[in-house]
Length: 140
Ligand code: AMP
Ligand code: ZN
Image 1 (spheres, rainbow, N blue to C red):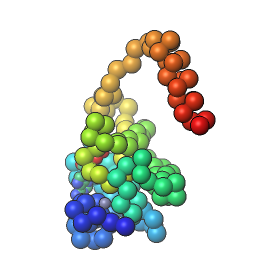
Image 2: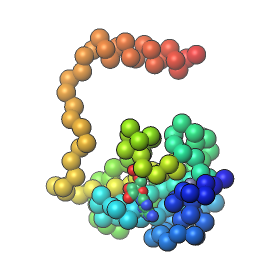
Image 3: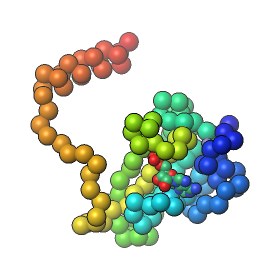
């Protein structure tokens, strides 16, 4: 399953250039060409699923299996101190390419990346109300 106007489908098919680093029957991994950090890698399922709301369990599992393989290789190759996984769904959440993908972003102590938000103590009544609603939805 692929989409004609999807850049990641073109990369998977070999119809667009990419710095591929890993491939198996279900996924392809390649370097991001607008990297947040050296070694910034994207892991994508070969099937075109727009986001986390659409991807089936087996392709999601295949992506995570590849992530588990690539993460230590990135760390060891680049002597990274850590690594962020980032996965965006919908333009409200910064998604720009509508083909499910997991970002692997190597990190070094003292590097220049900063968290996109800041945390503050939450309102426990609101947290509890959300927990009740969500757990209800999940048990239906
Ligand atoms: P997102 O904003 O989570 O949808 O991430 C999409 C990512 O794809 C961005 O980090 C882009 O830099 C990256 N990207 C877009 N086009 C290409 C391409 N042709 N090759 C590699 N990475 C790309
Ligand atoms: Zn696609």
